Amino acid sequence: MALSDQEYIRYSRQVMLSQIGEQGQTKLKSSHIIVVGLGGLGCPALQYLAAAGIGELTLIDDDVVDLSNLQRQVLYRSNHIGKAKVDAAEQQLYGLNAQVKITSINKKVEQADLAKRLINADLLLDCTDNASSRYFINKACQQARVALVSAAAIGGNGQLAVFNFAQQKSPCYRCLYPDLDKQIGTSLNCQNAGVLGPVLGVMGSLQAIEAIKLLTQPEQVKANSLMLFDAWQLKFNEVKLNTNRLCVNCS
Ligand SMILES: [Zn+2]
Image 1 (cartoon, rainbow, N blue to C red):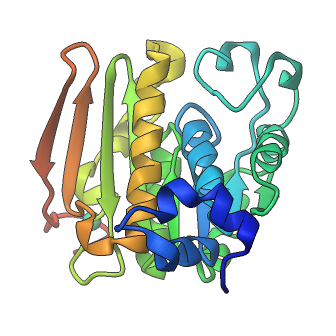
Image 2 (image 1 turned 180 degrees about the vertical axis):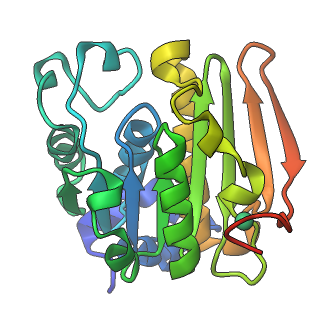
Image 3 (image 1 turned 135 degrees about the vertical axis):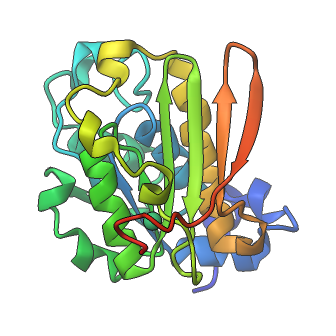
């Protein structure tokens, strides 16, 4: 799959990077990424992935655009209010780069045939905002041995973790958070605790960065670590992740 003249021009600023090059760009073109959750994380991540020339994107979300989303969900415009997020996002992403093949699934991830879709996917971005979806996605990626790029944000804080399930002995999301089940219904999220919009931009952009690296420079990806971002202090901290012997998925 060689690059056309138009593609050379469109992607010239990243093809000229030694870490990407023509080979890396061709790899991005032949790659398929699943993005679950088209909110504050999914919007910036998708925008950068489509712009970077990922060949195929599958979008999964069952929500519609709400007025209160526009503060941070940067793909949507006021005239998208009431429209399915997958449809509004697809329209915006095609406007940005019509060469990307987009499949939109207007369903909850639990009803979206995820296991089947993961067979043909290179990696998945978890941009959801609740524990049950995160557990479901984590388990599906672990079973399919597809790399999972997970992020979250609340208030002025964000976190990012890459679980490279293609590797033996990778920890999983549940090794990190074994007991979110017990908090379902009571846990904080953006809806009840608020979030600074650009924090989601930072974390979603980091997901896109790690996705592009997983496809082109996998050895550079920080797997098995949790990156914590504090916007108020403008600081990143890194925590090493290990497999949890008590994890219900890994033990
Ligand atoms: Zn685990």
